[in-house]
Image 1 (cartoon, helix red, strand yellow):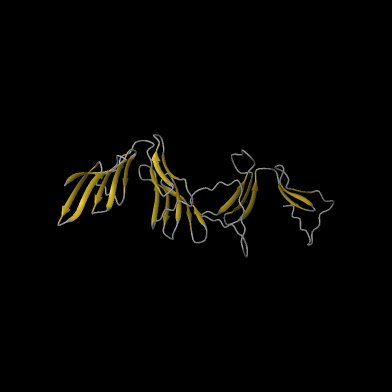
Image 2 (tube, helix red, strand yellow):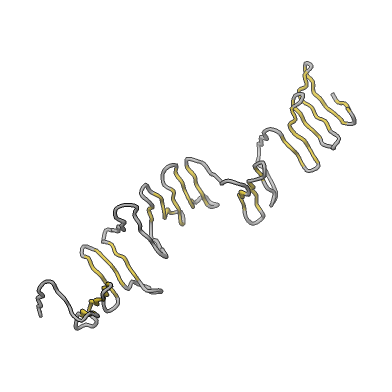
Length: 239
């Protein structure tokens, strides 16, 4: 029934002597909705609504720009759109943890940007194609890797760089802004050192040797030492 107690209006539904639902106002001009005799579920206040329990929506939650969904006792997690960008913002302590057997980060049309498959590979994509993936032994790169520097350091045994392809493999070294290689270490069935300069220089703490033809007539061997030393005899075939 409807009543007025201490200046506050009340509405109660009573079945078999037990209150099943109720609504009343209070001295703060708040409207309170209850289930049962004492279970307050929703309160309408001057600033909005306070809900105790679960809200079940049969449609979407529509909010304007800069309106935020706030989670956590201290509003630690915020989800909102500011009219230009969308944000998931962790403003409190701890980390943002995303759990799932298969996790996908995609663009607006569903093209993969990053995938993480359980205890398997984590892959980074470019244009929808996987370019870098983790493996049990490290990483797998599809395409060309560009590095400012690279350090290979093994915790035990030998550190190594292994390369290969159907035609062989090579490492190109070039001076800044060069369009092509200036020095190449190559194997295509035959090991070779190639340079676009006039010689290959081998240097040690004691000096250097320059090897290579400096013109179309001669092959040159040059050193800053006063003598050449050969521990075996030298056979010269003048051709």
